[in-house]
Amino acid sequence: MAPIPGSGLAKGLAVTLRTMTKKSVTAPYPDTQPDLPPRTRGVIGLFEENCTVCMLCARECPDWCIYIDSHKETVPAATPGGRDRSRNVLDRFAIDFSLCMYCGICIEVCPFDALFWSPEFEYAETDIRDLTHERDKLREWMWTVPAPPALDPGAEEPKELAAARKTADKLAAAQAEPQEGES
Ligand code: SF4
Ligand code: SF4
Image 1: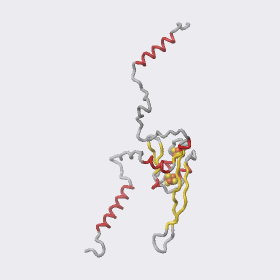
Image 2: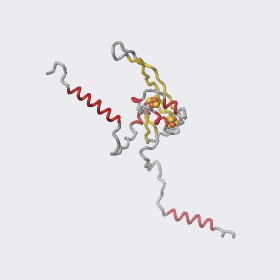
Image 3: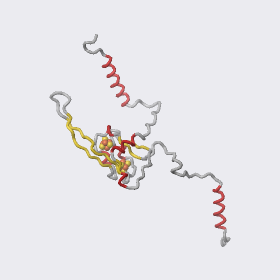
Image 4: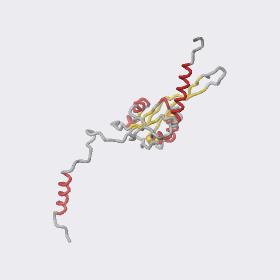
């Protein structure tokens, strides 16, 4: 049977009328900020102090968008007769967010907890070159990284906490001991 002329239009108008009276489900960004989960993958922060320039993140990044430069420095031996050691010093650490696909591999593979997700996402640029964030900018993102979620009350204490407590106790005991020459 042929459709009644104008029935499609009437159906469309009926849908329009129905939805006109309902509350909107879209959030008009940027007037309304999205309510994102705290672990959102927005941008990557670098905690430079933890980075040993092992290059693992740069090697594992599927997009090759992590740029690291470093040089070696000789650290004199701690004890007389000991051997001098060499250590890597970071010269450049940058991430090109125009290439990054937010896979999180760099964060997962970093053995020294130097990279973290921040939920910040408002860093659009009009010049694509500005999407390469150098170490200072990556450090700034660190301050927007949310605190880790609380441990399960029944969970075993992390070994890092036990080790830190042991060191603190040792230091406190050493400080409490009377110094030589003191009565
Ligand atoms: S999130 Fe993935 S693509 Fe982006 S820098 Fe890290 S490893 Fe590379
Ligand atoms: S994997 Fe971690 S420690 Fe190694 S270079 Fe990358 S950020 Fe630094």
